[in-house]
Length: 194
Image (cartoon, rainbow, N blue to C red):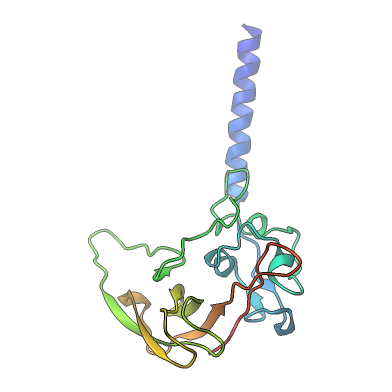
């Protein structure tokens, strides 16, 4: 009987601890970073890092000079964006899957509304080519775009996006170059601004 009560207490404490952890689960950042450290802007968000599938990476694997953070891994500093709240941590490379075009955070449509698509014209940035992954900020959201095969720097191509993400002038277009790092198995990010 006493063992049953102790087990029930421990079980109750376990669930209280899980609830507290879920409430405290929040992304860090944005992380301050300098241009000479290989960053796209003075601040880099968890959403940008998760969209680039960097949740399993260490900050020092991604940037020449990593931003100041208490956590060495992106997934630890960005549990919400990396989907690791309430778990032991993110799987290596966890993050949104790479798609032709997709919103980093899925749109929340109210019931009964329908979304249509529009074509967003994008110019491939200097140094890019078919196969590179671009992040494009448009209408307050970030979308991921693969540069189509055969497209070279300076050439324009169209990408279908949700109508609410369409913008005549998308800003802060960023690109990823997945070149291997000589000293390890991580990848360095290389960013361009259009």
